[in-house]
Image 1 (cartoon, rainbow, N blue to C red):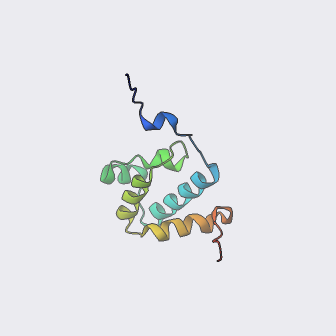
Image 2 (tube, one colour):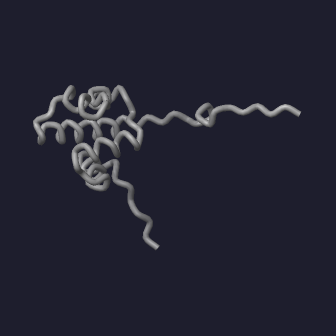
Image 3 (cartoon, rainbow, N blue to C red):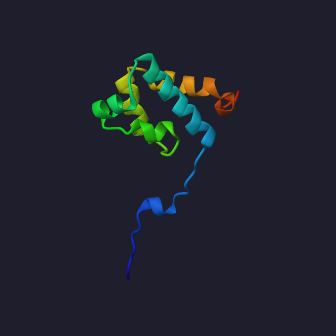
Length: 97
């Protein structure tokens, strides 16, 4: 009996939400501007090519967002609150019991 193992990622649907990526991009630009940092400075400090995220050419992983939040010293909840504030369509309505 033969079993074939395939990487899990082969079966995952690739989802790209342009509104979300645009809002993330704007929040990152705001955070850099508030601290007067260039994209190159962030890359030198973190190894993260923030320019690719800011141009929405790259969909950042949650781990990348976490590392950027640590770098900017902002809680994840605050980061995503700012993302939602930029585009209210990204707010998910809670289900009331």
